[in-house]
Length: 223
Ligand code: HEM
Image (cartoon, rainbow, N blue to C red):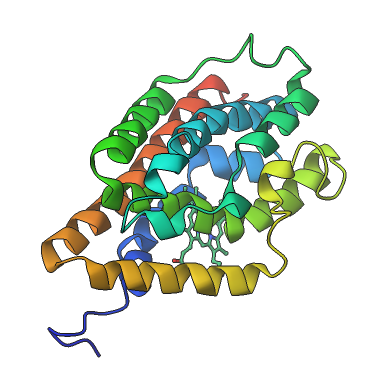
């Protein structure tokens, strides 16, 4: 149990606070159709392209954030995804992948939020870091398996490198360490700030949900 001196572990707070949002993301029309094999590889490539913008924004200020007392411990080269996404996109779309890529409106809004947080409120940035990277280490592994099977990518190869963390030998241990960092960050924040970060975590899920909705609208249901 938590006491006023010792709040509940922040990792547990974030997980509980975002569990309904997680379920909504998992059950979103786009994710259900994509992972249910009802969309083609083009939709998967489209998602990967949108994630490129998201991770560029998440990782673009890593050097400055590494110096921050709250966000700094989360900055970890082994998590960085931008280079892996670029390899996937070169495989999925060819060497000119960047020419045809454009952010969807929801992606642009997500990127704006990430850039603002990285510059102005690094503790809020941590909520987004958690939402993406712990998700990639968790459900991302399920998504990788389905993508390999559905579209015939080589196991852990080009096309699904985004979901492969070469620098992490033991994902379960990495997740435990990550949660310990969240718990330490929570202890360094006061109640108001912890609440704000928790709300930002829900916002992170909502921003992801909005990207899924924009993507979903690109692939009308066939009759
Ligand atoms: C169909 C898509 C998804 C599936 C199948 C899925 C599945 C899962 C599973 C099984 C876990 C639990 C892993 C564990 O406890 O070790 C998990 C955790 C997580 N997922 Fe997802 N997920 C999906 C989508 C998403 C999305 C879109 C996000 C956010 C953008 C996300 C963020 C997270 C986070 C942050 C966790 C860690 C929760 C915690 O323990 O604190 N997931 N996911």
